[in-house]
Length: 65
Image (cartoon, rainbow, N blue to C red):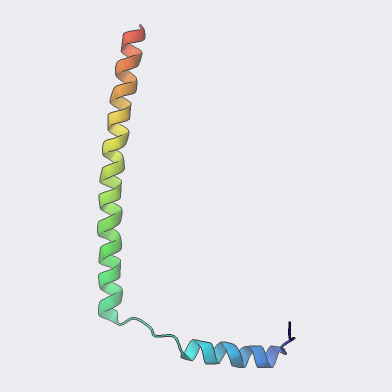
């Protein structure tokens, strides 16, 4: 593996950073909105699953008394 000087490393980092295509403001907002929607949907889903298992466990425990 070739050793690179710190100065050469910084040049390479700068060159690679220049190749990055940054998202537009609209793309960033749309992605954020989609993340919020998906996180909300998953939260509601897991709330339902947790409530179902809570009901099942409580019902089974009531039968054991």
